[in-house]
Length: 419
Image 1 (cartoon, rainbow, N blue to C red):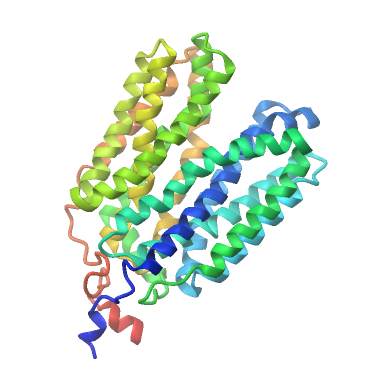
Image 2 (cartoon, one colour):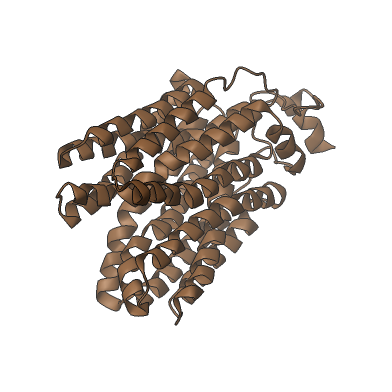
């Protein structure tokens, strides 16, 4: 019986596994489509409440920080109770947050309705669903992760024009009410169809702390803090930089859309390539590629060169998002994967809150618009340096190809699940 329990379940890499990847794709599309459509609501909300750009833009920073910080909660709960109840709670939080936002009469209230509601909604759906995909695959895990997170790029492309169209027809309040119903329904359907992997995942508290004490997890976390600065910077400062070159508003704003479009290709292509080239070497290559793409921004004096930057940076960014969950699974296994991913994603909360304001301070102090690409590129290079030793240390938990082992005790996964 003991040897039989160590055999891979025939459900891995099956049609049902790909259904889980499709559900993850839809979850990412809806959750991040809502988040990244906030720019469409920015001007009408600021105009109605007479708020400054800084005050209104803080809503997005709070939301990003919330879902990155709360991801560890969503991941841990999903590991312990399964994805379905956790994701249903996330669907309700997303719907309630959007609906409540449509009724606010003071701007500060959106920090609670949108920041907390959407923060919980993303944290309780995105991280659990990625952990589900990681557990359902063995041979094609990297490709499946790429398919799943490509939903983020597709959501960016689809929801921005959808939100703009709804605002034009009904106003921003009714647009949010309609998005509330749509997002809640879609995420609830994904939750009801989501299933735990064939071999049940046990509580993640012990494994998370074991992983967090390893040098590899520390390298991943610090590099994630640094590379996230490089990822967030163009979304905040690239349009303004383009306008400083005399490029009109619409073409400048479209540069962010090019990043989203290129990221889809990066997520799909690099996720598939990792199955052949090796996940950790490709992750390191993608990190340095993203960092070096900023050389093009630094040297840019035309719209064409900025478009080239967005394509290269977006492809690398998409690849990093697709590869990072698979890297965690490769180094530490899939037991407690949700909690480990959630813990790793808290690094992005640090970057989203500290990175853009620091860059803005440097710009204000120096009066130079070159600081965003300089700071982001340097952060990316440092992230690569931190990652260079990654994978050299031996980690005992390396997926589900054989019996999982605790990082400290050597106890097999099959023993812990049955006992």
